[in-house]
Length: 450
Ligand code: PHE
Image (cartoon, rainbow, N blue to C red; front, side, top):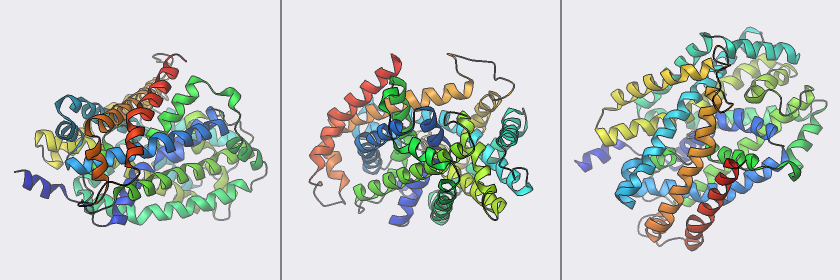
């Protein structure tokens, strides 16, 4: 019975395919939509430095921890924690799946905006550098009651289609083809953005840290963003790890994924922040709308701008798709492994549920804008609770579990089957045992006490 399950799970076709798919999960709206405005709102350079520290110290170790757990268990998070670390760790997997579900529900809303923007660019509605026109277009879209929900629905259906298609054929093929194109386009846009008049100030804001404004909130925002961007602290990387064949050298793949993700976030920062300064905006302006507000102006300043615009938002939609697919995949795999639901049933059921949860998220930019809980709209609340609390908490627990309970077995499993643990494995375990739990715990407390 177990053998049959393993056969049905599928595996990544090639090493590059896996890296592309895991990078496809990591690289998404988190890098291009969220990272620039989080940096803008949290003081620029200082945020970038703290973010980088979080990536290097916690991110990389935890990506390896999650991937290796998945590979050891060949199962999804709940079963993986249970089988590798014992019954009392399975709630960590449960928290992960729940977090994935909630993130996906607001993720599809922003992905829906991306779809809408493909149309806007194509129709010429954004062919202006006037920031008032651009912000009116954006606010009309997100504030309207029906349109953004339909886009979110369309996006949800696309995700479900990929997930039903299965691991190798759907996710892997799409990622391998489109991620490199997105990268090239991004580089071209950075070149344009940094050469706009006034852009230099934006680069200075991004790269010259001013630590005087750092608060507990900055720290939580940075670690939350690091986890969000790396798809960490919830089921995604464990699930993807369960598809990596035993003969691969896992740390090298993890390193590639973390570097790519970070590179793309920094490139997105180099594109959006200078463009904001060039448009006469200040970096905190626009909040969650920043990327959508300033990019059309960058396109408009390029020859063939509308074409760039259409291409860019299409690729962003694909990047969002590969990330949302990993979120949905986590939920679907859980239902498949735990309850034996068929892939199709699990996918359709969870997609309907998350779409229903997406509706109030979308409305919180319009009809429900006044409804606040703890001073946050429904959308912001879901984002805050998942990114700034649930993901770091999930990461902390994963670090404890992999460091203390699984320990040397995990170190051994980093290497291809039959080879001994890497020489630096003791250092990795030290980070998982002490550095990550204490560091993440300290940051979580800083956030709570403000
Ligand atoms: N990492 C993805 C992004 O940056 C979002 C994501 C978060 C995906 C958590 C899976 C898990 O857009």
